[in-house]
Image (cartoon, rainbow over all chains, first blue to last red; front, top):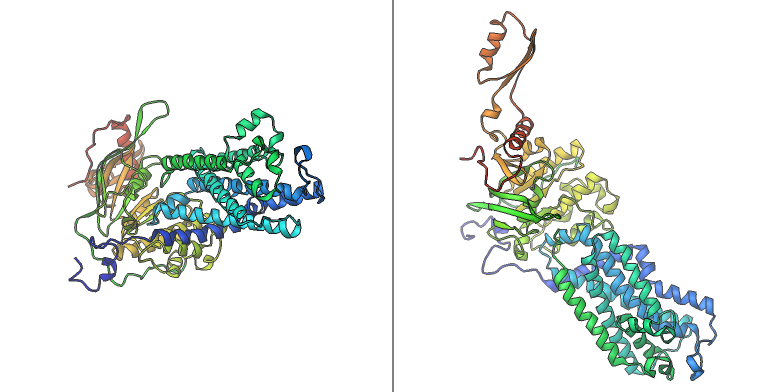
Length: 292
Length: 319
């Protein structure tokens, strides 16, 4: 249809030739979305404080309250006591995975489902996968920035000793990424099930608050009553926290864990299960665009 | 939108495709009612829009305009019937289809933290052949607000930013769902100019509106939707048929106020004025405005069809 009319080529060249249909580049657009997501996040001062810097604030607060002397010992004093900052570091890194994964995504995705943002994007050629790549990029940016800032703060300001064994850092990396992934899926699923952006914002706080108290982030996990431990055992944060403790606490502290061992394999299984279930729920509930 | 408002990115007029660009046949969208039963938001609607045409959908709130337009945009799945847009079924159509349409949603409060030009740049990268950001910003008259955050805009300015976002992809077919809500009269006139320039460019425009003057100004053809049904369709000067346009004569005498519908107003006036020897009080001759016709059609619809059935009505003014 284009042969006879040269001057009109511009409108004819666009995506009309059935032999060569135009396709957007899903990955490149996903990277563009990542940049937009990060720019938008950084403009939200409340999110910067309550997600990105929150673990540092808590560590600073606890060090102020409990001091910087090595006063925290494991049950039965089998090992030398450590400073409060060292004790809290693994728990706060674990807390970061629920903040960056769950709290961030459930809040933003719910808002975008209800304020027309997703609907607007769904009216453009942007592939839905690019939207998710953007969210993944944002989440990675958050968890990496948050964790690096916390580690720098712990290492240089609080003098927390860092692990030297590469094996430890490997454990650190997979526990961090897997947990963040699991929480991200939970966050998006939660956003899809919420009845309004407002209820999502309110309800998001609950799991973060409750789980951080039942997963050994603020209190030693083994001091919880057994029934509460049993409940916490099916949630991922508890296994992220124990995985991180295996990395950052000195040898001998596994004696303070249930079963006197770190159970890293179990950590992997529980977190992976959450990731898979979350993925399935998201696949079933996420609509592009949202349907009333 | 003081300085106006034409988009010159098209080097030539678009080549019009033969046949309708939108074909809707017996389209129905039903929702389950919360207390059981179902409700047809769109009920057996059939119409066509040709390439280059500006088509306006009019109707009261909740009539089904937005649902119809959202089905055409691919945002909703029809329950039954067929909708074809640019040769595709719009629901879950390919990105190549979406690159050819522009969508201005009825309400959106997103992107508040982004700047006007920034949000347009972000959208432009999704398209194979976008318009220039500066040009689109100028076309909607937001040059002075180009770097302002969208949340800082007034309601009408925000709406213009929405329109800009619908134009950035250089669409062949533009959907506008109540585009001028919140515009001041000057902005509305400038917006009309913009839509006219798009129409001259060959862009097909489908818009919904509550404003009869807007439909009259812009639409090549319009359809009136009530209770999910298309109750009338035609051009602004023919819709509703000749009967509803018959001139009316109003006057007052000792017996009170009179109004008479007549095809021969001059002879009627001659009679009531006794051949020009007596001046009737408050004499006027007028033809119903589009608004009168619209209200008349809606009234008529209510009286013949208090409870919507699912059989198609006879549409007036169709060949």
